[in-house]
Length: 457
Image 1 (spheres, rainbow, N blue to C red):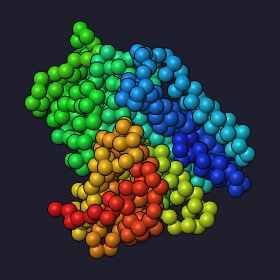
Image 2: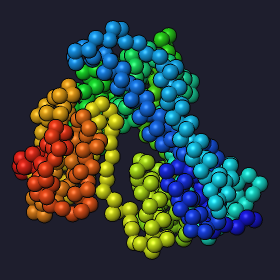
Image 3: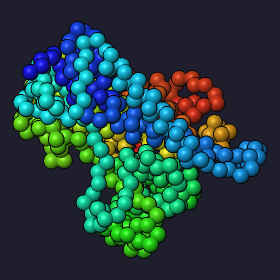
Image 4: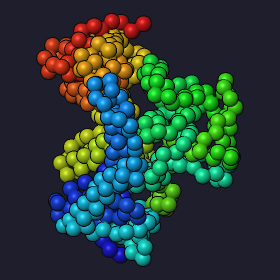
């Protein structure tokens, strides 16, 4: 048995920096990776999708060049080159991370499937490792729903889409949330006809209705067909490719396309870890139960990143690492509940979201003030010719604290950070309102937005 001070299972956005941080303090660290270094973010998440979105934006802008007085002639796409650009960025990130970990002092890398044989013993291949502390960072993968016909027809997921080097003639996207909308708009701009199929009454079900409706209109303006209240009942082969049979739909009971993308959620990679043998408790969907410090039901065993169900983003995974490392090395008392929810939907325009939605603020019993502003009122948006969307901010009338915001518009994924800084600082909204911003920017309208608050009815 090989003994270490710490074992880290997985090299995602929490595991890799934690390994280096602990090793730099002199701890002997074992890192176990069964697949590609870097986890979802580098391999089939943030890095590749945002690279593809950038290419799709360039294509979209080229088609609109005439609006800016620029004549380009016919616009053509080379999906092979688009994919090659994406692959090069992914490879660079993956190989540099692997080299960093495999050559880092006090760190030993094992390749293979990790499986607990006890509370703090882990088998990998023919080796058995033991450590005082174990950190699980195994991430997740796309959910493939158990639908009739799903095993009989070819389908794509957010992972297998990374291998696509062509433009599907007609792409059916099952799932109208964050992943589905990003891919749907991306491939529409590449030239596919796209249908988004959503079982709910609106897109992105966790968002407020005004945000969801604005997103639907943005996508529809680009020629994307959105089917709401359409439950996917079955998949079956069709002469053109694949047919999706729908239920509870006011429109046609089925839709046919050349390809289908399943974008209906994710599941954690926890089923082959031997968690039961270690006494590590999981929720019904397989997420590892953790407390506010990310410790599992077994002392000194922690779960970080997507597998703990406490966040599904690169930034929340990295913050998990920061919480665990700070508590362990500096005796801090950081908790997951200290984190203010913030995320983005990287459609064009993007949606930046922070704090509570309207629905969440209402449930919290707040006396709410709200400010709204269409992006058509933002000079920077008009100058760029990108005026879709709106800004919305929520404030507690009694404390004057900012409760949350949704910024759907050009630069929204960046602008939202000025509000989260104020929220972490517990600043009254008036501090932000009275600040001076650069003109012409999107951010300069935040003080104006806050100056036009009114009671939420």
